[in-house]
Image (tube, rainbow, N blue to C red; front, side):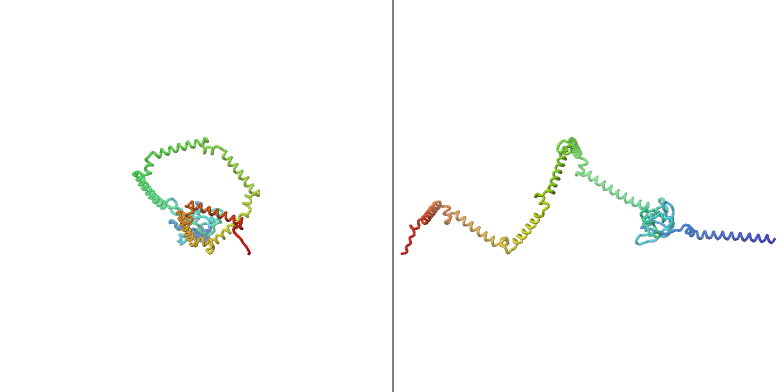
Length: 353
């Protein structure tokens, strides 16, 4: 009887212990659910600078390659970046991310919740570390698309209205554009021009005319090739020869002489510009001009008087008889002088006593 009671009590104690342990485990599971996940799968925090998060909320999922690998733990405003989003992701995911990875705010469907998609970056970039800052961006919403589409449609409408007004002005006017649209002369001229061009092209293709010969006949090319060879030979002769051209190219004696000549010319010019010299006075002193002007005026008056027959010179020029008599007198004086030189005793007599 005693053994039966003892067994019953022990069974009750074991049942109580089991129930108590079950309750403790249940309580621990509920209370420390997040901590257990952290212990089993440790997480790290990274950040992303995003100008506009477009309604992203805390707790939003973070995807890598389309797999949820974390969540948004904090969103804070930043004066430099706009917003800074702190993400808590599994540590193992850092092996797939690089420093140049980007965080993009996307939408689940057209009007669904927001989430963050991380791309892997390039293999050349170093691996991402805990606490690093990524460059982020937001996907264009349907609202932004509608606004941009509305503004574009408005601009297109305005452009169509302006084109309608322009076409109306062209149709109602008699200007150049209106004539282009209505007058068939332009079409006829273009047709004739195209026919002429076709004929010219056909003649060129046949090798007729100067242009055709230039296109078809290779003699011009041969001549140019021969000329280039001649020039090449001439240049080689210049380089290897010792003639005048080679000396002009290589010898600097002519250059030095030219430099010396220019220096001498410069000094000569300075001397000419010197106001104290003869040339300076001739160029700058107006007295010479006045003297020459007066002298030319006097000579002009003398020549006028001579031309009128005034004075001895005028008489000699105008009166032929006086000129003849003067010539005869000069001849007689010349004969007398010669006779005196030959026979001085006829004209000069000297006696001492």
